[in-house]
Length: 387
Image (cartoon, rainbow, N blue to C red):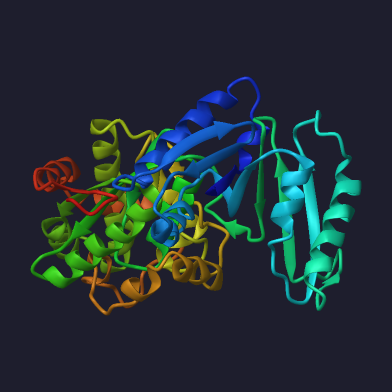
């Protein structure tokens, strides 16, 4: 029987609460494969996907590679465990070039030691593939024979990398400040990989920004659902806030004050939706608003955790991940977001809290926050596209 053998990632490091993470991962696997007929079973340290239409295997694999908590998967043949049955199955394997046989024996009642059995199976493969050659280190094909405690053995030749990390939904909820840029989608992806459920907040500035800029953010969030699952995407109009800052404050403090008001709004929404942290795509020193002094000033207005998973990444690192998760092309579309509106020529890069608060005193911050928050709207994006 053709199956997919799934191996989980860091869950094996968990102690007495491992079963909680295993159940969460099983739930996510089932949800990611909604709409596909299959059977999912758990065995020690593995999950088995079976009873699916063979032509759907590529689609199933593509979905499973995005499930955080899974480490790797292998398309495999499942047979009842016996030395004779395994040997007969290995006779069918076609190999070109260098290969090795790797035997794992979770079932300790299996009568042959793994090293001896691997050598025996290597001889069987050589007998049926005269042009093949055994090479334990520099091999082209690794024939994996996984003998499990459930009375079955799984035989495959491919290892496909999955998302890694921890299952989404096991590490609380965070609110991602999602711009239309390259960094913030990667930040949301990174926190979901650590098990966090992620909602998103976008600030728009109509009429200074276009509907295309808003649609770009929606499309980015749709891309992220493949990894995050369903995403609640919130929108707040930031136009009047920016106009008030531009009209009343030193223009060089525009970005700093904007970011502080955004943080206040993000905290207000976080508390309303029971999110325990704010997530940003900030990378230290990348732009004026991401210096140590600017980040310190921005953080000072909130009393909840702010997660900055990209803080030590350079742009090359971030772009590499953005390409991997297929958000880079979308993020590169030339539509302005609200942070580029009224952009000062010489933004302050080392603001002191005293000077920032002096500029903010020229505004009715509470009124601006309440007025902006009243424009809040929500769009739920579903993993399976039925929004």
